[in-house]
Image 1 (cartoon, rainbow, N blue to C red):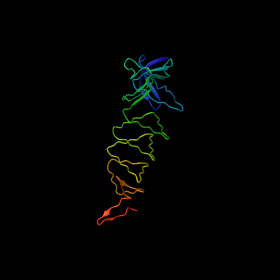
Image 2 (cartoon, rainbow, N blue to C red; image 1 turned 60 degrees about the horizontal axis):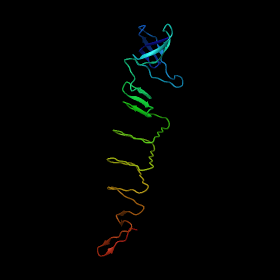
Image 3 (cartoon, rainbow, N blue to C red; image 1 turned 180 degrees about the vertical axis):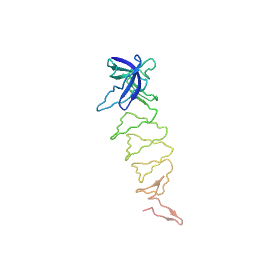
Amino acid sequence: MLKFGLICEVDAAKGLAKVHFQDDDVPSGWLPMSVQKSLKDKYSFPFDVNEHVWCIMDEHCEYGVIGGAVYDEQEQPAGAGEGKLVIHFADNSSIEYDRNTKTLSLLIKGDIKITSDEKLNVECKEANITVTQKATVKANEVNVEAQGNATVKAASVKIDAPNAQATGNLDVTGNITAAAVTASGDVKAGAISLLTHKHTAPGGVTTPAIP
């Protein structure tokens, strides 16, 4: 028999709840909460106390199962719309997919934690990431590859590494300060070559170029 009532007690660890049936004005015994899967894959999202639910019970209301929750005059769907799947949480976090615009939206009021024992692959056409405070990336090895230009814009940039290499040309519009500079080829300041430049000393003596 089909009956409606309000959840009055929940045992989330066991997947059970008690229901108060208004027409009988009595609470049920412990009833299993119907879930999507419970064997190899397990699903858990317990009902809340005072949640309006429907149950299938035997004729004596001794045995049965809680089939699911229903909306009523006091509680209406949050963010509902045609072609939209919405999960709205009590803290105003939400998960929403709108098939009309093909948009998946996550609004999380707290932290997001993703843990994987293997790889995490993210593929998309374009990505925009905005961090209002601090971003940290830690890895044994980091590879950044761009088919076009790569731009780093910051108030200051610090590279802390025993060795740093640049392949290709390096153009600097500001000053370079170094404790020591070693070059395997020539070094020029404007048209003046460090290898071929000669100095004329007093008395007309010309110093040889650096060998």
